[in-house]
Length: 104
Image (cartoon, rainbow, N blue to C red; front, side, top):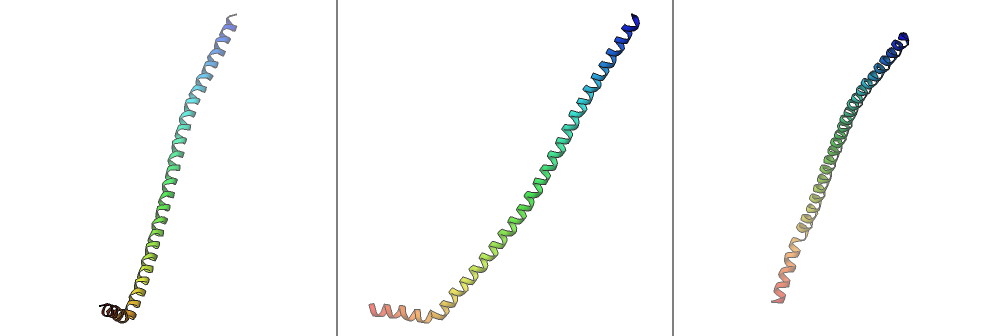
């Protein structure tokens, strides 16, 4: 009978050890999952930051190109206006002078 009780106690002790090991394993697993989650979160954030940086670079270059194109177009138009003015200046002065003199 004592042997049976000793055997039951041994089995109970082993069972408790197994349960404790399982609890410790669960705690380690939870800790590992948390660490992996934090690492993944940091990696995702770093990738997002890199993408945002690339997009900002691209947008800045595009804005610079648009500004440059707009400035070139403005300068072309201004030169055309100045050319028309140079070509017609004398005629316009004469026309205005004649309109004033003829009305007066």
